[in-house]
Length: 405
Image (cartoon, rainbow, N blue to C red; front, side):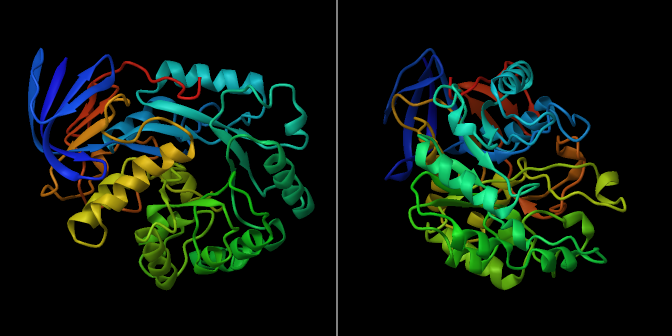
């Protein structure tokens, strides 16, 4: 048994001087004093690692933007040891064949554990595999369908599912395609799309709203539904990020939207933090038709740890949002440093804030809207008791597995 000794974040206690015994990838025991085969006295603090339930690793289909190797290495170096990949790859993950093909790719390349979302198409709930496919959730997009189809699909899945339905919460009838001269035009094209969508969604405890971006959207959340927010909708807005590089769906908004969402996040009204890591190359972003999406899985936790360090966010809220709440939402027994759970954790020096250095990041996108922002990267990251990243470098190439198998 390996024994880690130092300051550890313990549920309902906070930082505690204790020992954590790790064996066979699990936390065997947490106790004030332990003996083991190997004693590791770490510097800094031990926190549970993050579960990012919203990433786009672009593989299969677009490996020049990202693949499971580069995306998972980005995650690991940012303190994320489990991700859920969205289905809008090429082909879409929409049936057993495409699911199995993506799972095989992830199993061979990913250094973090993973889940896969399945795309909602008409008639999905009638498929014979609907109740058996080992997906994390269903994902419903508003693109390429009418609003009647969009809301009909949502109601049908919510009536029959036993796992979350994650929606891209923008109304198809309020997503306009007027030409863009500046980033604010994209925001104008989607001005009411979120609030109109969410005010029309049915109430359901199975409903999960991805990437909340507006005060109006927050105020129109369907009852019983859960939600997530991304760092870019907490920290970026049309004043501090005017470049078309920052085109993202849903769009960046105002400082007031940042403030309202951040306050709701602090209070737990928005329970989950997710990155919506959606990389494109910088040449694609600076073309005449820039695609929407920002990289973020590697910078999400370091940015928010810096927010904690500077007193704008409580550590307990961050840990709940990045670890405990997403694990609970996906019915996974993980996300806490507790006896019997998976030994996924990171070591952090909260005094080691450094500007984000693009040259040290791992995404194939090779850019970030947060370059030079202060951030606290973990010094070590452990997945199932194995060190997989140290000082922003991957140290272990053993692969992850599907958390929902």
